[in-house]
Image (tube, helix red, strand yellow):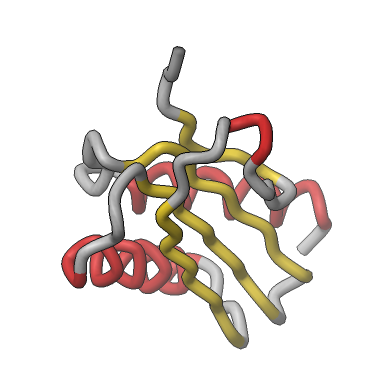
Length: 100
């Protein structure tokens, strides 16, 4: 699979996996991957992520993995009140809440 085709597939899979999972507490979700070796997703929250929030992001990874069989994945759920522009971003932002 070419890099362009993999990028398209991963981003479409991620958007589909996020349907129904976004809550008002999520500020931003960012992703990146290394070929099909490693997929990383990081979700920033405006409160400490609950067990359900973490479970939801793990389920998102499972959904993506059903489309693209990454060897490993890494899920990070982080509480942060920093300005969006100051948050560490992976290669792609797949969700960004409007903030003042």
